[in-house]
Structure formats: C-alpha cells, structure tokens
Image 1 (cartoon, helix red, strand yellow):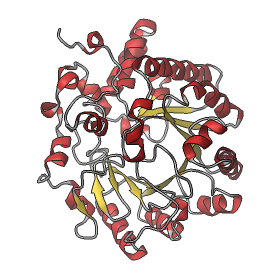
Image 2 (tube, helix red, strand yellow; image 1 turned 120 degrees about the vertical axis):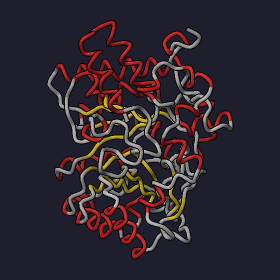
Image 3 (cartoon, one colour; image 1 turned 45 degrees about the vertical axis):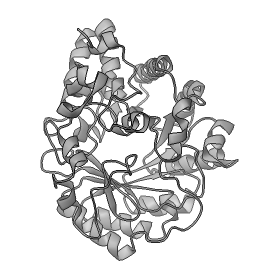
Image 4 (cartoon, one colour; image 1 turned 120 degrees about the horizontal axis):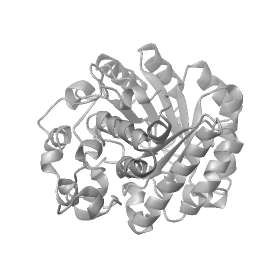
Amino acid sequence: MISITKLLCGTDYYGDTLRYSSDSQGQVHGAVRGRGPVVVWNCTRTCNLKCIHCYSNSDSRAYEGELTTEEALRFIDDLAEFKVPVILFSGGEPLLRKDLKELAAYAGSKGIRATISTNGTLLNPGAVQSLKSLGIGYIGVSLDGIGDHNDRFRGRAGAFDAALGGIRNCIDAGQRVGLRFTINRYNYEDLDAIFDLVERENIPRVCFYHLVYAGRGSKMMKEDVTRQEARAALDLIARRTLDFHRRGLKKEILTVDNHADGVYLYLKLKETDPERAVKALELLRLNGGNRTGIAIGAVDWYGNVHPDQFTQNHTFGNVRERKFGEIWTDASHPVLDGLKNRKPLLKGRCAACKWLDACNGNFRARAEAVTGDFWESDPACYLTDEEIGAGS
C-alpha cells in the first residue's frame, strides 16, 4: 500500500506509522519491529453479491467448515500473542458472519485494531451504530465505478446506491470510512468521477487497487489496463491528490498492489519538485516495497495461512493446528521463506531493476498467474526498461 498523499504532500495518517518508519525497515516477520504483520482474515466466503473480479470466488451460499466462534477466538488470542497490530475482517462479505461483532470486540479487547472490508450494501444505520460502538477503527467500502459500471462488476443492480448509502451512514455516525476502487479497463474512465464523488460526499479516504489475477479475477488478465493507461491513471491520481491538498481538503489517497506506483511518482517528482523527490525516495526505501509474507498476511475461512489474500494457492499451515506466529516464522516452506528475502530469487525485469529497494519485486501473484513462475517479473509493472535501468 502506497500513500500518494504522504509521498506528494508529506501529510500523516494512521497507517503511515506501519509503512514509513525506521522500525519497519529490514523486518522479516512483521510490519514494524516488535510487532507481527497486518492480518487479513477472510472470515467467511459467503457473499450477497457476485463480483466478477472476486479473488475468493465467493457466492451467496453457506460454505461448510469455516472457523467456529470458539476457534476464531483462539485464533485472535494467537494474533494478540504475536503482537499483530491490525486485523482486517474481510470475506466474502464479513457482515454476513453472525458473530462478527463479538469477534471484532474481542480483537479490540486484546489490543488489536479491528477494521472491516465490505461491499457496503448491508451498512444500514443500525449496523453502523453497532460497529461504531465496538470501536471499529475503519470500514473500507468497495465501489468499482459510478452507477451501472459498479453494478456490472458487483453482479447486482442497485449495488452502487446501496454501497453509497452505507458510506453515507458511516459518515453520519462519525464512523471512519473510505472507498476502495479496483482499476481495470472498464472503469478506468471513472477515475475523475470517483474523485468528484469523494469530494461531494465528504469521503476522507480512497484506496485505488490494481487488478490482481486471482479467483474470478484470473479471467480478467486481458481486461487489465495497458501500461500507458496505468501511467495515465497515476498522473490523474497524483493531480487530483495535489488539488485536494492545495484546497485544504483533508483526503488520504492510496494505491495498492503495484509498487511501480511509488517509483513512478518519484521519477515525476524529480522533474517537478526535486526536494520532495528526495523525501519521497527516503520514504519508499523505509517501506521497502511489497511486503507480502512479511508485513501483511492472510488467513482464510478454513484457517489456512497464506502470503496475502490474493495468493491463496500457497498455504503455510492452519491456525486450527498451530499458532499463527509459529506458522509465520517457520522457514521450512520455500515460498514463505523466499518472500522474507526475495531479491536473489527474482527473475526477468524484476531481477534487473535498480529500484528493488523501493519495490521489492512488486506482486508475485500476478507474475505466477501469467507465467506460472512465482519469481518471474510482474507483468503489471509499467515502468520502461530505461526507467528501471535494465541493460545499463
């Protein structure tokens, strides 16, 4: 996750302490020194929508064998013991899990910041007030376009209006909320409109995700943006972020799942604001780039531990059998061990790139989806050979 606001404007938000700190540099098992990783828990696979790019292949049916309440409470105990700073309840649709409020409250009581990733359609005023009373740190609501564009991706007419209503309910209740948007060829032209929506609705945070080819999203490789479109998207995101900042509008803007973004912004800043460029590069190197398997991990509905929520084809153990911290620090699995120090294993353009200390090989799930090789180059890197220093 890259804070465009932090790189361009120098402003501080909560997550920056886990991303841009001297305590994050060189860590192999956690987000910062003395802490475990941020853990995404796909607490249920059931969902009331059927998104065409869903990495978990979720559907509106019950799935047998998900962690019970008792098992989930023990799992949260293990996370607290490993000093995990944040748990992100995701899905499927986490609000369909009947014990979600109990589990979120328990995580908070153990000193773990509880956050939720939802499609937003179930965030009625009563649900929002209940979540706020539990001290939920943040709710991220997914919108993948304006109106019908979103509904096409979400698989249900009216999903946009329902999700926007959920966001409004959060804002009215004083619950911290933000918007999540996955960039692809079919909603790329909605980016400006999304920024307009963020301003009009007073939404304080927006995360722009790059498409990952996992689950149903694996069928969308050819529907990803081109390299030129990706560059244009970042130009627009940067321009609108700076515009918000200049007008005194406090908005946290981030991009997710493509660490080429940070390098691209740095190269742009070198041309327009060299002093800010130096600070941006320092921040990127503090963060170290993609930290899948290090600062972020995932656990699915069955308790299986994965490098991240998009890489569920690689499993390191199960929290029903071993504590999360024991699994996360076990070097016997070649993929998990490799992710802790991946630079010598990278191939192709990633191996030749001079920005490895700021990118760390980008996103492995995309590389494997396209090439079949986990350590090959990420095909979504849109930097030119000249920009990465290949062949020089």
